[in-house]
Amino acid sequence: MTDIGNSSLEKPRILITGGSGLLALNWYAAVRDECDVVLGFHDRMPAVQGATGIAIDLESKERLLAILDAYAPEFVVHAAGCTSVESCEKAPDIARHVNIGLAENMAHVCRARGVPLVHISTDHLFSGADMMADEEAPIAPLNVYGKTKAEAELRVLEICPGALVIRTNFYGWGTGYRRSFSDVIIDALRQQRPITLFDDVYYTPILAESLAEAVHDLFERKASGVFNVVGSQRLTKYRFGMLLAQAFGLDPAPIRRGALSDLPGLVNRPRDMSLSNRKVRDFLGRDPGSVSDHLLRLREQEQAGLATELGKL
Image 1 (tube, rainbow, N blue to C red):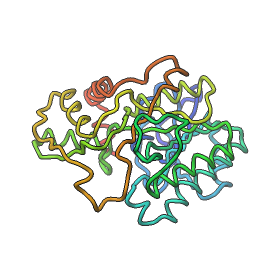
Image 2 (image 1 turned 90 degrees about the vertical axis):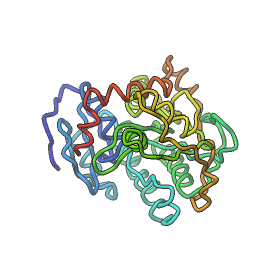
Image 3 (image 1 turned 60 degrees about the horizontal axis):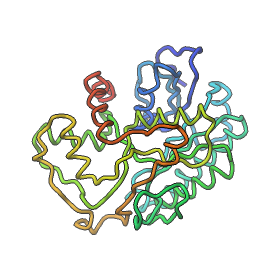
Image 4 (image 1 turned 45 degrees about the vertical axis):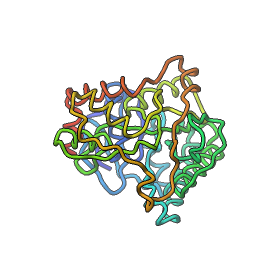
């Protein structure tokens, strides 16, 4: 285990698995002033200034119990997983083990130690036939990734009934070793390089910072069960790119309108992944925010140096 930087014991402590991923790093940046963050790393261990980085073995319940005992987090965010739709389809056994088996391990140890668990799920759980699915909509995943994430939700809640399951689709600043979707668009626009974005795939994305803030608010209010924590705008990837260009004051000319149907070789996936955030809005008494608002915040984050900070990792 490696301690990176100085952590204040006076702050509430959280543990995030998948510590080298986009969500974990943006989550850390969002809450580091208020929380002591422990990032659990698997095969990559970037030196994150101000965080506590530890090697975490999600295969071993005994080692996970030891970590919970050593760090005593107020809650755990399980963000580790196999998220590539194509990779999951090619290796379904690995996808099941990583997305279901490791989530089960974390649920068992959190229940054993009485540590609240936040399990990060996805918006790839439905057929795409209907828009703005709520938490009660029937699950109907189209691919291995969606099926493993759907089963993981069920298993986590069976093992750890008080867990908080978050269905979401997020974006934020990437790292030097893994660029984010918004990074790719911004880079293309600034280099005046053509980029094609689907205009037949709908979703409700949310800025990772806003996602983290909403989850912390849910935790403070002792929420449990399934919540869609997403933005308030249903839009296509193409429309997202156009709004991003506007927010950053960039020429949108390089953006080309494309269609998922033009790429028949891809694994089958829903054309509409949009989720309703009515439940979380009612529970928290506020709106998680629109894409337009979040993109302006993304630009503020860059101006404050976050893009450079994470890009150096």
